[in-house]
Image (cartoon, rainbow, N blue to C red; front, side, top):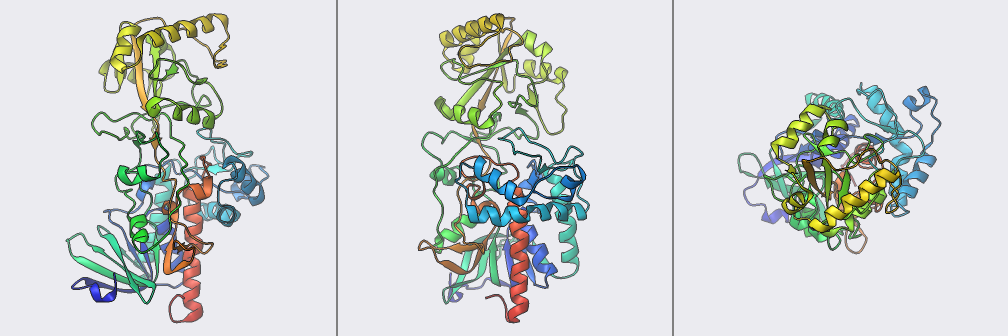
Length: 499
């Protein structure tokens, strides 16, 4: 949109920096820019700040921190970089990875200086994805909400000082382009008014697109369209759409690796049960597996006690409908630790047994044939699989998949099963940027005045075709802080706004 097309839009004013999105990255841009003397407008379509931090685990990583030193852990940004490139199979963006990991230790120390409430177990090794070579992952006692609490306090400070104006309930939908430069954004506020805000720098920190299945499926590889959605509803790709409408380039790497253990929500087709309420614990580091996992043919497809998260995640992607069924019996239900977990840790064995009877997500049957019918699984395949598994338990050896944890057979009715579908949580693709986080057009040139940070860049740039611990939240914070500080410094240097 050009200045001539703005019509009667209410003018919000001119700012040194306009930040679209008040999630992890956007808040850090705003805080640092304000601390550097810039005037900042932060706009978000939601009624509160924080974005995905409200439900995220909020794990972040950094090397050479004070917290590591206090525990005798030797580490360095160079070692962190090597680990990221190893775990990403060399497919992460080397320049952006180095730009962030060399400063992520400082980000961890910064959070500590702000009174971040670290979990006492940190830094630690996280086994939900492939692990680092040394403990360098951190999280708060309230997970993502611990990060949000610290950022909210700092935001309140800069808002109270007058350096930042916060405008919630306002959805940005267009860009103002003047003489080839992005000089503002347009949208609709909470009262339905059309608004325009102008800035020397426009920063898109709008998060991902995974709650928009039509857009998400444009980037997923074939056969993954059934992935259930695990993020919050606001992640609809607004910033990506806005930027592409004015010629921005987008990565299309075709990478997808699922989040495992999420449960389809019976009340919301295509979405997962909120994992703050319930998920299936699939990592043997956190719970001994007693159950078996089968596909639609009723066949096991992986060792359920395998220590490589990536191996089991990629095995799931090869199954029909990227779906698996967790199968157990009454004896296991009465013996094993609860299969279902959540961040609150309130899934007791008693609650799990009650859930088996409740039938929201768990199917129960007196025979394996009936269980298979209710699941839509091949009955002959399931009964044969259970027989072979029970023989492996008796022999203490699993010749099919090499499972070594074989605690109990499955043979005491009622039998139980739970469906789990591969889930998407983080957007893999996103806007292409240069080393200054300026958004690039389809020729590879920077679009003047437009920057991006956080998940709108896509997680591939920091994790390649895999998940890498802390390489979502931490780059958003670290690069957000660096971008905010640099934009403020440019304003001070020129005295006439940001170049």
